Image 1 (cartoon, rainbow, N blue to C red):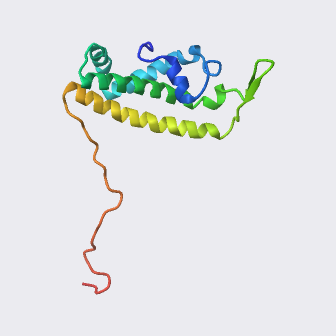
Image 2 (cartoon, one colour):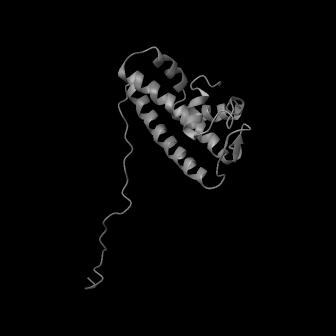
Image 3 (cartoon, rainbow, N blue to C red):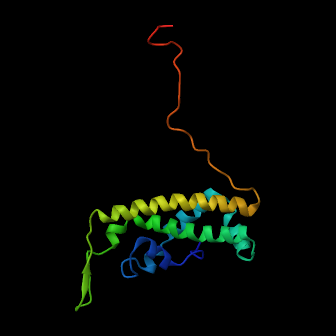
Length: 160
């Protein structure tokens, strides 16, 4: 599956890097398109066909689905590249007269954590938008309590 759903500049914006640091040739590696295809099929096996159909529609549900799909694909590609972020971002860049230096340690972890969280958020939003688009209504995931109230069968104080 080629990357016809997003442009590479969006991925760079999410990661905060330039075309020098993350080139089109890196982003066009086939492994990323395979990962994206697997993620999309896990959401819905026919999601690409539904996306193409929704592109020609003007209903609020179709527009919401298309926007959610576009944002998710950018976030997914950014996530795939985020693990390599410290490797492809140089510590210093100069053109002979001016330049800048970038710390090559822990600051990347903040970006990676943010990209992972946004990936999960937009995957959830895409599922909801897809559900609205196909007419199934919004699905909600029940929030399970971490702690609950329980009463022992025997009162430990009185023994009864």
